[in-house]
Length: 98
Image (cartoon, rainbow, N blue to C red; front, side):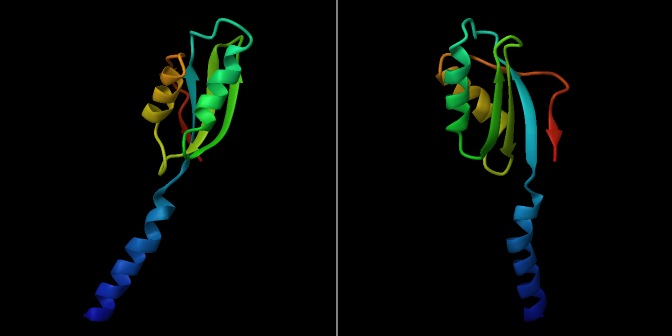
C-alpha cells in the first residue's frame, strides 16, 4: 500500500510540469501611436516571468507573445502593457497552444 501511495505521489510531483504548455497569443495594443512605442511594449512584456518571445508590430498595433502558461497568463501580459502605458486586449481567434 505504501508503494502505491509513493508512486502516486511521485507521478503527481513529476507529472505536473508536463501539464504546462507554451501558448501564443496576439494582443491588440491600439495606444501605440509612434514608432518608438513598440520598444516600450516589448520591454514590458519581456519583463513578465514565463515570456519566451515577443514580436510587436507598430503598423498592426499588436504584439504576439509566446509564454509558458504555467508561469504567467494573458491577464498578466495585458497588465504589463497597461502598467507601461499601453492598455491591451486579447485579439480574437489568436490563442494557440503548442
